[in-house]
Amino acid sequence: MARVQMVLKDGERARYVYHAKRDGKSLSAWLREAAQEKINNERTQRRLATPKDFDEFFRRCDEERTWHGQEPDWEEQKKLLLESKLSGVAAT
Image (cartoon, rainbow, N blue to C red):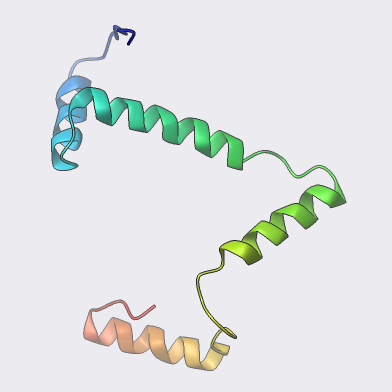
């Protein structure tokens, strides 16, 4: 395993350590995960340049969809949002 040394601005180390501990991780593990997330985000944010790119993007969106069946109609969705606001609990 390779060792990497970093130079940080004042306060950055403490802020990173705080977030790492909050997530139950070591600083090294937290930084590795942050770097991997950045790489993954760059992969998914590539430009859609051709109609084929758009078709592939929407095909993947359809595959990743988490709801089952038809989405609620807009009036039903607004009702759920209002109920959620009033109760303080997210229903959607």
